[in-house]
Image (cartoon, rainbow over the protein chains, first blue to last red):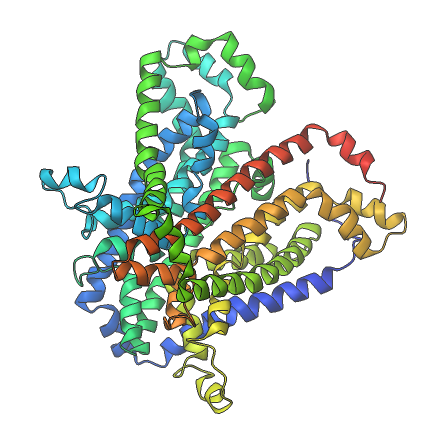
Amino acid sequence: MAITLKKRSILPGFGLTLGFTLSYLALIVLIPLSATFLKASTVTWTRFWQTISDPRAVASYRISFGASLIAALINLVFGLLVAWVLVRYTFPGKRLVDSLVDLPFALPTAVAGIALTTIYSSHGWVGRYLEPLGIKAAYSPLGIVIALTFIGLPFVVRTVQPVLEDLDKDVEEAASSLGANRLQIFTRVILPAILPAALTGFTMAFARAVGEYGSVVFISGNMPMRTEITPLLIITKLDQYDYAGATAIAVVMLVASFTLLLAINLLQKWSSRGQRGESREEAVIAGNPLEPSFVQ
Amino acid sequence: MARTITLRTTSRSAATSVAQGATLESPWVRWTLTSIAIVFLGLFLFMPLAVVFVSAFGKGIAAYFASFREPDALAAIRLTLLAAGIAVPMNLVFGVAAAWAIAKFEFIGKSLLITLIDLPFSVSPVVSGLVYVLIFGLQGLLGPWLRAHDIKIIFAVPGIVLATIFVTFPFVARELIPLIQAQGNDEEEAALTLGASGWQTFFRVTLPNVKWGLVYGVIICNARAMGEFGAVSVVSGHIRGLTNTMPLHIEILYNEYQFVPAFAVASLLALLALLTLVVKSVVEWKSQQDLKEPEEDWSVEPA
């Protein structure tokens, strides 16, 4: 299925489709996004700096980025484990489990939010067992981590799974015949092969978690300085008609998301090169074309 | 880095039978790892899903169905259907056009264009809502003009539709681009040589080849459109019966401690999510079937 389309094409419709694509993209995405930067530029630099370095804003970055990092790390470890179990082992109900992994992509965040809050509040299914242990899950930073873990759960599983499926077992057998034990084979042979994909999934989960709002607002308790995430701070500022302040914080978030988007693109390039030495597009096609296009 | 050369489909079954000891852990390790994975998924996937339905039926079936007789709930459902009904077709047309331009032609700046199409995925939903407030809101760039002409976009239905379009923007395009690229151009070129028009070629050759991917793109786009919370929350203004979508209505009910109605509405969205996953599984199965008989695909399309 190699693509050798470098020549001039006889297919029609290039002007029409590209023209429509570009105008729609500009109208819906590019012009509105640049309006944010335009609005931010009307604020003086000192005012802008004051807003984004305000202690409450800084606390919200710490909570948003900190909780997202912990959640992404949890997903990195458990995502690898789930992908491994789904690819290498068989157990009853495996197909069902496999398709349910995508649930966080499809379940509305507000529904996830109220469901997780109900489970982890002091009378909930899990919360009631945590409370005697002195662990407060809902309405605490731990609750934010729980919600963000749910949101980012599919990313590492779905990036690692196809790579693990493609992994050649001959190499493992060779390593084994040369005297390596199972753990050595995992750390020296398998892990290096799936690492780029795992890191891509990790970064995607992190990026998704940083911007997440719906599932977190229910479970976090929303206390300023303690459990207030950055997207919520933007909403708070909007509710107070502080448009300049909301825009300044939004610019910080946009810069963070663009940086993460760049990181994801670079990781994907590395990942597909490491995997098979082809271009990114070809690697995407060679994998499962029906994988959800890792939504953020 | 190890290059994979062997055929994917055969390597797995062959390898397991040849040297199980080298590539399989002891039963004890397998059992432990599987259990940890199941417990983790149980805690984070099964339990949230189960709690939605258990809470929705917490006071019986009558109470569950009574939740949908509320005029505000019905208005929220109607608005959600309306927003998705506009956003999904628009993004479908965009996705097909973008996929055609990107997958069928080589041009400069193509990878930049793909990245730009992905942008809405990486923007926080709250920021997505905010950008429209900054343009169409009272203090926004077009605010004074809109006010003078008595057009309301923010805190009204158009804003909700716009925000929904923004957050679901890339879905269909992202699903179709790799699929159409994988098909190559040969079939279309043959159809054109045989005298088919551009539209005929598209509808009779290209579209049937990617129909399953298209179905999944539309259904995941729809699930996201109906479930969007953050972006819609910013532009909605939360006016009951007027600008509340289903997720926003759930938030209000939940914050008023009306748990049964909140979870009842939530259960509809959870069912939609489950339906989306079912369609995804069917689509994957169907497209694997198609892959297994590629020769037939060639002969079936006389165009």
